[in-house]
Image (tube, rainbow, N blue to C red):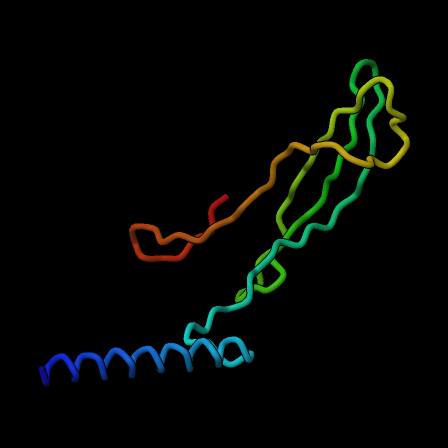
Length: 120
C-alpha cells in the first residue's frame, strides 16, 4: 500500500515537471535542444529566353551558395530550364510552370591519407 502511494506521488511529480516544461516552451522559453537555424541555399542568377527553331524555353543560370556557412565556400553553378508552349509569348516573364535543371554541389571528404579534400 505504501509502495502504491509512493509511485502515485512520483507520477504526479513527473506530470507537474512536464507541465512546467510545456509552459516554458509556450511562453517562448529556451528549449532543451539548441538547434542551429536552417541553412538555406541562396540562388543568384539571370533569367533569359531561347527562341530558335523548335527550341523555346526560359533559362535561369547563375551561382548559388548557402546563406550561413562556417567556412568560406565558393559559389557553385546551377541551371534551370522551362520549356515554353507554342501559344505562350517567350518574351514575357513566366507566371507559372515547372523548371527542371541541375546544380553543382561540392562536398568535403577525407582521403586515405586523412587529408580533407573537396569533391564535385
